[in-house]
Length: 510
Image 1 (cartoon, one colour):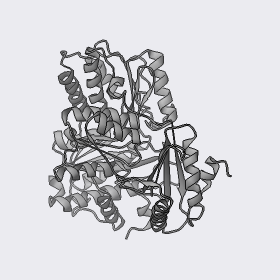
Image 2 (spheres, one colour):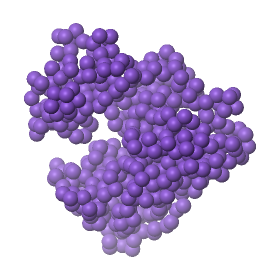
Image 3 (cartoon, one colour):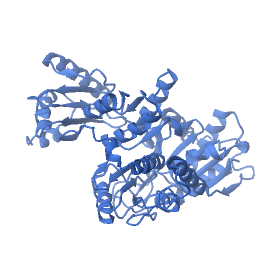
């Protein structure tokens, strides 16, 4: 069993923690010693898993723009090298590129130092094998190794393994350029006359403007926050963040650009903005990605997380001729489900979460924001030849009039048991009330309401990792979300172990 100090570092399929002083009440967790123990534990775990001595293993190491990145890199590389492993130091890199080193460079594993969109003072470690990102159970094993002080035989006793600089991002950018050249088919500068604004949020994504788009002829003027700066002084690098999306939308309109793209810190997520500054994220991004994926896989199944809209399901199935498979929140969950469906003979070309994580079958089911944006730009360039825009692909998508997300803290120590009890009670309550339970919900309880009762739906679920129950509500009419929330609130008031301030405040009851 993991002790609390190690258990707190586990964040799903990643290791994350406080890496810098500066926030009151949050002492540094990822100290040099802790990082060295984790990296040595990973070396021992990798050797055990592959049955290969560390001296015969190669591991690539990269980092995003966080201020703590160089320090953590130094500690991790020192431990890996002391294990005898050959280390390829890729410097500033995107998370998807680090996975691709296992494909292009034959690395046995890759380590990315990142905490995605988390605040500046946090950081983390994310691991890849050639088969993909590690599972949560793997992370638990590595932390158990670290807790027990396990490290490879000969650690610090033999001469350290070699550490080599590897400018892999140059090769990664070249691959994306080649995809655009081949996909558009207008020579080596197929984006001539195409104006694209890139917002990297001062993360690791600035390369996309200078090393991918500009060499292909694109006008990238108006792009912003391309320089890496781990303080993130302009906005949170997160396509789900309202301030970030408003910033890139304004930049697109200001520049008179054809398209805008925005990345999160480590470029595994992305969002877009059309020429009018309208956001293409969440359901709109899922719809666009589905339209592109289904062109090559007609009739295929699109796997999404659980909070996608009713209008999106209609769009995928009635407009695109595909199938919609709602699954659980969590990008790794939707990716694993698409792979599972494929192994069962179901053509599932796209796994995508409304957060912007998108993984396509033709890209190793890797959630790669730069690859998704590349596919979108290829389609935009193709449509431009026909006098059309990306909007034409998703014009039939029916979007809700309003939506809201509320989060309820669980106050009981065994939060999972409490949440499951509440969900079971809600399902029984819904049946008693004659509410319409969704027949395709694979997470939580999803209920639909017709006109007069809110004309929309709600989904109550248990958070993947935290003692929280998120509630998502959408409605096709103004005021419908409150109508739905009021019906659910009557049930929630009778449930012990749930903090209801969020819904009380939303309804004006407290």
